[in-house]
Length: 130
Image (cartoon, rainbow, N blue to C red; front, top):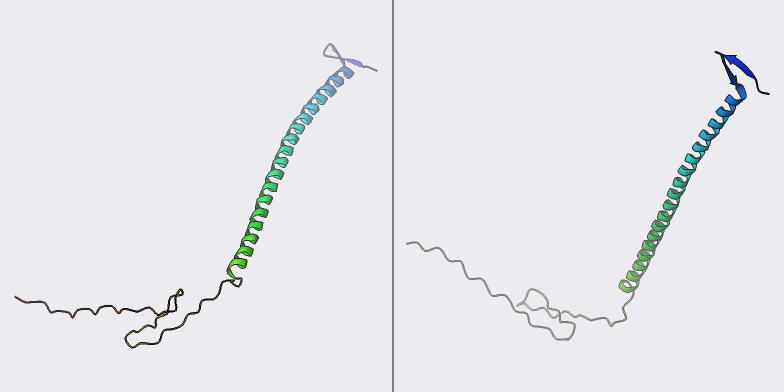
Protein backbone atom coordinates (compact mmCIF):
# COMPACT_ATOMS: atom_id res chain seq x y z
CA UNK A 1 0.00 0.00 0.00
CA UNK A 2 2.05 2.78 -1.24
CA UNK A 3 0.72 6.21 -1.04
CA UNK A 4 1.74 9.13 -3.06
CA UNK A 5 1.17 12.73 -2.43
CA UNK A 6 2.07 15.81 -4.22
CA UNK A 7 4.39 18.22 -2.50
CA UNK A 8 5.74 21.17 -4.44
CA UNK A 9 4.86 19.53 -7.70
CA UNK A 10 6.73 16.22 -7.14
CA UNK A 11 5.50 12.81 -6.17
CA UNK A 12 7.07 11.29 -3.08
CA UNK A 13 6.70 7.63 -2.27
CA UNK A 14 6.33 7.40 1.52
CA UNK A 15 7.34 3.73 1.70
CA UNK A 16 10.40 4.27 -0.45
CA UNK A 17 11.51 7.12 1.79
CA UNK A 18 11.04 4.99 4.92
CA UNK A 19 12.78 2.02 3.29
CA UNK A 20 15.81 4.18 2.54
CA UNK A 21 15.73 5.54 6.09
CA UNK A 22 15.50 2.02 7.59
CA UNK A 23 18.37 0.77 5.41
CA UNK A 24 20.51 3.75 6.43
CA UNK A 25 19.79 3.05 10.12
CA UNK A 26 20.63 -0.65 9.67
CA UNK A 27 23.97 0.28 8.08
CA UNK A 28 24.71 2.74 10.89
CA UNK A 29 23.84 0.15 13.56
CA UNK A 30 25.93 -2.50 11.80
CA UNK A 31 28.95 -0.17 11.79
CA UNK A 32 28.35 0.59 15.45
CA UNK A 33 28.21 -3.13 16.28
CA UNK A 34 31.46 -3.73 14.36
CA UNK A 35 33.16 -0.95 16.34
CA UNK A 36 31.95 -2.52 19.59
CA UNK A 37 33.27 -5.93 18.49
CA UNK A 38 36.70 -4.41 17.75
CA UNK A 39 36.74 -2.73 21.16
CA UNK A 40 35.66 -5.97 22.81
CA UNK A 41 38.47 -7.86 21.08
CA UNK A 42 40.96 -5.27 22.36
CA UNK A 43 39.61 -5.53 25.89
CA UNK A 44 39.75 -9.33 25.70
CA UNK A 45 43.41 -9.18 24.69
CA UNK A 46 44.16 -6.82 27.58
CA UNK A 47 42.43 -9.19 30.03
CA UNK A 48 44.45 -12.13 28.72
CA UNK A 49 47.66 -10.09 29.06
CA UNK A 50 46.78 -9.17 32.65
CA UNK A 51 46.03 -12.80 33.49
CA UNK A 52 49.43 -13.88 32.19
CA UNK A 53 51.20 -11.09 34.08
CA UNK A 54 49.37 -11.87 37.31
CA UNK A 55 50.20 -15.56 37.05
CA UNK A 56 53.89 -14.73 36.47
CA UNK A 57 53.92 -12.36 39.45
CA UNK A 58 52.19 -15.01 41.57
CA UNK A 59 54.75 -17.63 40.56
CA UNK A 60 57.61 -15.23 41.38
CA UNK A 61 56.11 -14.41 44.79
CA UNK A 62 55.63 -18.10 45.51
CA UNK A 63 59.21 -18.87 44.53
CA UNK A 64 60.53 -16.08 46.76
CA UNK A 65 58.46 -17.41 49.65
CA UNK A 66 59.75 -20.95 49.17
CA UNK A 67 63.36 -19.73 48.93
CA UNK A 68 62.92 -17.67 52.11
CA UNK A 69 61.44 -20.61 54.01
CA UNK A 70 64.22 -22.93 52.85
CA UNK A 71 66.84 -20.32 53.74
CA UNK A 72 65.46 -19.88 57.26
CA UNK A 73 65.31 -23.65 57.70
CA UNK A 74 68.90 -23.98 56.45
CA UNK A 75 70.12 -21.30 58.85
CA UNK A 76 68.27 -22.88 61.78
CA UNK A 77 69.67 -26.33 61.01
CA UNK A 78 73.26 -25.19 60.50
CA UNK A 79 73.70 -22.37 62.99
CA UNK A 80 71.52 -23.32 65.91
CA UNK A 81 71.79 -27.10 65.86
CA UNK A 82 74.10 -28.78 68.36
CA UNK A 83 77.53 -29.26 66.91
CA UNK A 84 78.95 -32.73 66.32
CA UNK A 85 82.50 -31.44 66.87
CA UNK A 86 84.02 -31.88 70.32
CA UNK A 87 83.90 -28.81 72.48
CA UNK A 88 87.22 -27.01 73.04
CA UNK A 89 88.12 -26.65 76.69
CA UNK A 90 89.83 -23.40 77.58
CA UNK A 91 91.58 -23.01 80.89
CA UNK A 92 92.72 -19.78 82.40
CA UNK A 93 96.43 -19.44 83.06
CA UNK A 94 97.43 -18.66 86.60
CA UNK A 95 97.55 -14.99 87.42
CA UNK A 96 100.97 -13.46 87.28
CA UNK A 97 101.76 -10.09 88.84
CA UNK A 98 104.01 -9.30 85.88
CA UNK A 99 101.03 -9.30 83.57
CA UNK A 100 97.78 -7.50 83.97
CA UNK A 101 95.78 -9.80 81.69
CA UNK A 102 95.31 -13.53 82.18
CA UNK A 103 96.57 -15.60 79.29
CA UNK A 104 94.50 -18.32 77.64
CA UNK A 105 96.16 -21.24 75.90
CA UNK A 106 95.59 -21.63 72.18
CA UNK A 107 93.02 -24.29 71.28
CA UNK A 108 95.54 -26.57 69.53
CA UNK A 109 97.88 -27.08 72.50
CA UNK A 110 97.49 -27.13 76.25
CA UNK A 111 100.53 -24.90 76.81
CA UNK A 112 100.27 -21.35 78.01
CA UNK A 113 102.01 -18.92 75.66
CA UNK A 114 104.38 -16.39 77.07
CA UNK A 115 103.13 -12.85 77.12
CA UNK A 116 105.56 -10.07 76.49
CA UNK A 117 105.04 -6.70 78.03
CA UNK A 118 105.40 -3.60 75.89
CA UNK A 119 108.58 -1.63 76.41
CA UNK A 120 108.21 1.32 78.77
CA UNK A 121 108.06 4.75 77.17
CA UNK A 122 111.15 6.95 77.63
CA UNK A 123 110.91 9.75 80.14
CA UNK A 124 110.00 13.10 78.66
CA UNK A 125 112.96 15.43 78.20
CA UNK A 126 112.82 19.13 78.78
CA UNK A 127 113.60 21.32 75.82
CA UNK A 128 117.15 22.62 75.67
CA UNK A 129 117.62 26.35 75.91
CA UNK A 130 120.56 28.09 74.21
